[in-house]
Length: 375
Ligand SMILES: NC(=O)C1=CN([C@@H]2O[C@H](COP(=O)(O)OP(=O)(O)OC[C@H]3O[C@@H](n4cnc5c(N)ncnc54)[C@H](O)[C@@H]3O)[C@@H](O)[C@H]2O)C=CC1
Image (cartoon, rainbow, N blue to C red; front, side, top):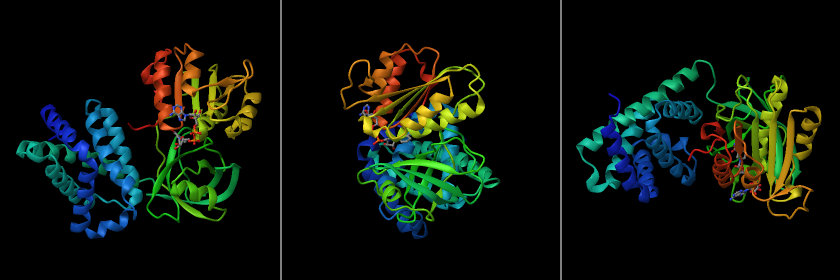
């Protein structure tokens, strides 16, 4: 039986009690899981900090999205497909559910009673059945992960590398989407990276990676990876895809390496034909020298009259009339209104959040703003 509206109230109330102590509750969950099911420990990375954080964020997201069943189902189905790369099987869901309920019971104190437990059992039953079904369906046509050999590695500026990959099986994706990637140097640590090109006939994939401070995976990809190294990729995911049937103009904001999926979208429109639609790209960076992808975009602009590319720098003063400076979303909003546009936002989380609210104020409808921030 699916959760009832009353179940949802009980679930949200439990989560609000557990949220302030989420780090301890999730640590307890993993401790229970690894003590009672030691065989699953090898499926997780040695350092569990990011993983701990993810579990609770996923639960919160599921609870908050319960009013949007279609969106929630899509999110959970994606999560189920994505779990195949960890080696997750249907048999794992039962023990995980028991440990999760035990951890929630411990950290919700006197709020936990038989009714609350039943509500969580119903919710977990639904969540796991959606994830299991999606994983089983995906298993019929795609591998759990793809091996991807680095065939080119080019350092564009100080900390950004462009990697070209060849997969062992065809990799089906859409421009604007991203993958999760594991390197041989940090086993079981998976990080997301967007594709920087639309799918091409040769099947090669391109990623832009910036080595971020304390970013183990990104630093290894920029400073250590070289042609011949073999990475693993999870399935493609992400909602930043263009609907080529609606013909509306596109407004794309890419900040830093967030310009990668924007470049892919431009390439896909060029392949597909713009059919009367205009595409406005705003490319944000801190300084002019960080605009590593500008020349590639300028080349697209020279070949396609429907495309306009404007760089925006945030930490440099630009002479009036010679360029744009300021925070990306703020600058774009000032150039509005943007009524009727379909917006695509990609870059640092704070930039995406701020830009989304600025664009809503300058006329873009919320449902026409695409990005892949989860919370
Ligand atoms: N699909 C997506 O959303 C993608 C996201 N990314 C993320 O984008 C980020 C790129 O990092 P970098 O290249 O180091 O970018 P960066 O830190 O150099 O900033 C790039 C742009 O974002 C703006 N920005 C940065 N912080 C801001 C804030 N707090 N408020 C408003 N604007 C802000 C800057 O002014 C600049 O225009 C990474 O975190 C990466 O994970 C990368 C690729 C795809």
